Length: 158
Image (cartoon, rainbow, N blue to C red; front, side):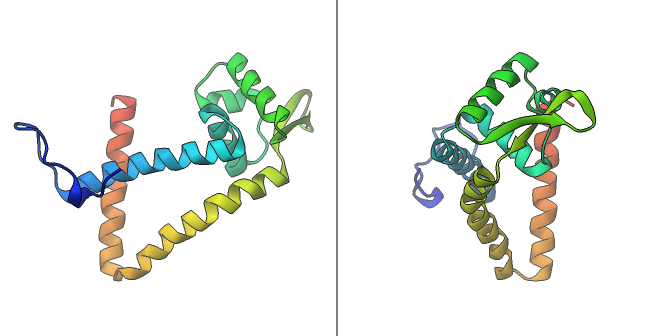
């Protein structure tokens, strides 16, 4: 991907966007590349990586709750869990609150492996804010909050 400043001019008649808007688009593209790279490193596909993200952020979840969060069927979730178990990222354990249920539990080694890749990037992003004044940080936060709100509106069709 070329830097924005070296990008060719848009075709005649195509809308022109401010640099911040183009950089946001570039950010989305590079985020997708990062996730693909992380998935390849962890030997999982996109669905499995998303399942791992939910488990790492929330802790153990039941298969039905994981399916709901992923927005896929319970059968598809079972297949994803089977794949994650096969590569050692999760285990199925009895649910202490439901003797018939199971919980999908992320394994500590997998958590450490994923976090070893994620945390330097996340901390680096956070450290970039140190280059801005408090007022500038507030403006950046307002802008990003509005961007997230717009994405949510358009994602849900509201």
